[in-house]
Length: 259
Image (tube, rainbow, N blue to C red; front, side, top):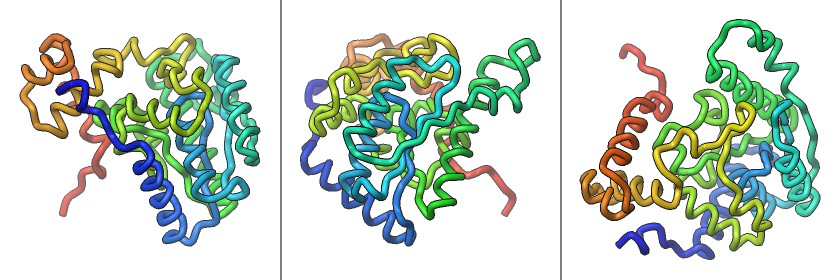
């Protein structure tokens, strides 16, 4: 079962997403879309799909590097934007984030400071979207959503989510289908919220196994033991996935309120 669990018709799905993007933008009476380009596979796929859906003149790409953003990521993001022929702007965020959180010597957890960067990027995206009458295109995928592996009101603050129904492994397949550079399509996932930040340091397993666990648990409603067998991981890994999902439920719902 594991080999077929993540299979999908990539051509059909591409057409479906393109239609979705056009529909969302049209129904909002918007003029286009803004995409934050990080040089990673998710933003690259979303950027490519938005260009196909709306045309290069209706997509704005924003590079928002921090002082620790890898040079290769920026080069990849610029290469993609130039290849699509879209307008793109470079807006460094370190000074803005430091104005909020203070210099490194000021008390504050690493995660709190990192989340400031994600929320600064969200604010910049919305400034440009509001100025142009565009929508903010989200770049999150289903793997990140189910794990809560995103910043609340940061990269989770968007107008629409073109690939939120696809697991990371599926996004990589889609990237190859769209003709994105192999170095981008296969690049290790990382939010790059601090120097050397890698997703593999925080998530329970690599995405090739993790996605099978997630699919089994949340789509096929398999029990933890079966999910572990299908993904060839320990039940402990599956339990960590369930715990991450439980603890981050607040990120996937509206804030609680009295009725």
